[in-house]
Image 1 (cartoon, rainbow, N blue to C red):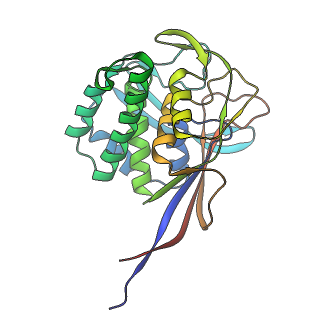
Image 2 (cartoon, rainbow, N blue to C red):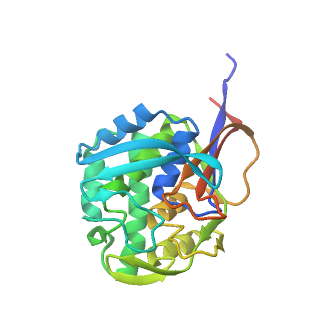
Image 3 (spheres, rainbow, N blue to C red):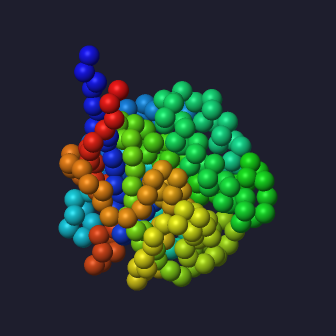
Length: 264
């Protein structure tokens, strides 16, 4: 019997304009991830109090998908230098329990849990407390939990095996957080990027172009950082940020490729 070779499907995220959880989710939807599968997977968390819409928008003339996630805490807002855009938060152990009890595909649960474990470890080091006791502010809010699980579900929908990421664009200045005003990029974002050895570059903006959610997703799920890897491109998607600054397309681009695989 002849061994069957399955091409390895990869996703390369172009984060030169920055990265946030909602932008990453929207890019994967734009690249063809099944919205019903993503919505049904998120529903497996067994939580309510949210609504999710995917809308067509333009950012500097580029047509893109915007993930509009509304919760009882308010509108999902990244890319905002006035407020942190998030309300209620949860301790890491509560999020782990939520994921463990949820009806999720195994790879979705494993990927999502690893993202939150990485962030909890970083936040624990910043605040000098046990990672399980860390209260995750932005990433503990319901909209960001939906972002993370939604991204992992979209990757599963597209059957993505390997994930890669470009250099990540960072703004500068001050960001408002649950702890007050902090340097921008936020400490958690910089800790995640530094620990992973992720390449970065500066952008001339005070917007929070790289959020902790976006940084946690890329530094956890990406196996390497750099130029787009070789392979045959099968799909391209563009995920829009909420802000639409002049002169810069505020988008995350994802390129889905298939390359050589392994024989069964």
